[in-house]
Length: 266
Image 1 (tube, rainbow, N blue to C red):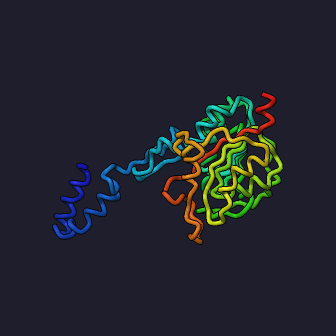
Image 2 (cartoon, rainbow, N blue to C red):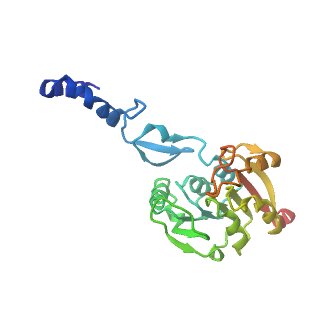
């Protein structure tokens, strides 16, 4: 703050008071941000995982980010598991998966956004599981909109054998589930409503594939009933743009499903 005051005094002497009044707001925002917090380079944490450096303070700390998926990896994923993640994002769920596999398994990640691949690599290195992770810049199944550098399309049938499959794929979950040839032990699925009126059929499809839904969650990790899940899945069928968020504004819910044969043998 002292340096800003000294700069303002110097500018006043050189350019006059009117110049200081006109230019001061811009200097303050660049230095302190729109919320008055210094814009120093700081870690951006999501669910306790440092994912990147962030200059703006309003989004650098999200304690419940991907809480449902992360909690499932903490409680369900086991030591030695192979985990495939479609939609790696910032690497938060991958971090929890790697921790739960006790670094003795393997994490295979598919991420459509080229910039996120770099973030994923940094997170894996920061938390020392880069030797147990395989990163793939590509879209599994139907094309989705991404912010930058979309990778190549990959056939759903090429998904590798794994113990746990996590789907956080922005609306492509039904298509991936219906087209995959693998049958992992556990499925963690974030289900996105969309205008094709298809992802509300995911529970029925899971039953056809031989899976039992063990639990429904809000994205915050809170357990909910099937009725509450169905309520969240309500969305506006008249919107031709296909909303990603639900009709009442709640983020897409998550389900955990386990293969019926594994339940019976266990």
